[in-house]
Image (cartoon, rainbow, N blue to C red; front, side):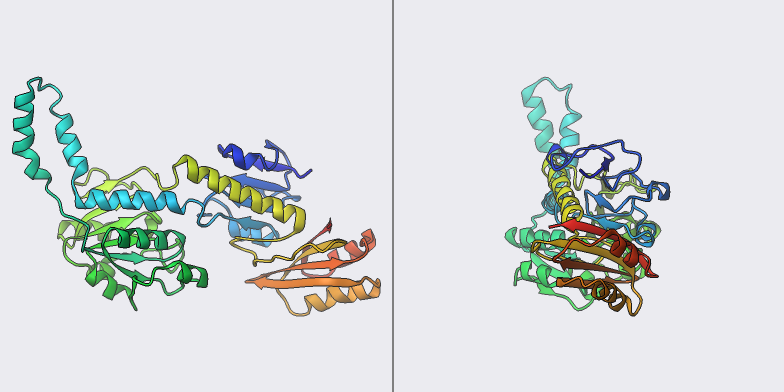
Length: 385
């Protein structure tokens, strides 16, 4: 039985995959928004799973240095975020929020005729426009962006897409009607609405800045349900003041924007649905269990994806620094001990490499120790398959 430590409220269906508690020296950690400190990286820790897409609350670099696999759950909350983006698009086009606020202010009007007169007289203040026929620029066409693009097409919008790093899977999911844009300025200049769905990294931090905002259509709407630092707040404020951006809707409240008349902010609700929390928890738990029981890795942010179908016998999972000659040294140890290898996978990612080695006979403790003693080997695990 593996020892799993959990933080935050994890959906029950995820916890059903194993029993987790406040364990002093766990082999794996499952969390949502809890900020994991380096001190939590105890000697026996093998993996950390984040029930969500972002891993900014996990010290990924430190985990990699210690040979700890970090998982996330891309796509598990995609539908939840997509639906919130659709709500934001509708709110941007029709002043539903303002209309509701106005009607609520009439709570003391008891005469129905007077209420109707006031409503009819003031409803022009909340006149909007239809989304049908308008253009939506989708920046980032992964799990969420592709769903948003498809939903916008269903609403009759013209959809422009930009993603220089689109994966093969994402490309297959993308409707053919999405118009591919070669660069961001061309997308911004043609879009009535722009929605951001890129991960936060060095290349995307401050992507929406003073320079890029100049390409926006005057009065266009910007939606940010990706990450707050993708948008330069000061540049955005200036663009709102001069009318280059007509409205900003985001899921990330920040000082200076709260209360702005042309800003609508929600309290980080993107994945806040029962279904999304359950999907993320189940996906994270399944990935942890698969890794702990078979050594297979799927959806890691710091280790390569490795999947080897169990074929009986025994399996070694070896993590090492990605330096030349490592695989040869491991196979030499196995050959010296006359261990028959029936299958093997070796993959690398950045500074780390990971190996699954299936053998017929159970490796002796001395063999495990010999592989562990190879310089640059970080850890070795053994499984009976």
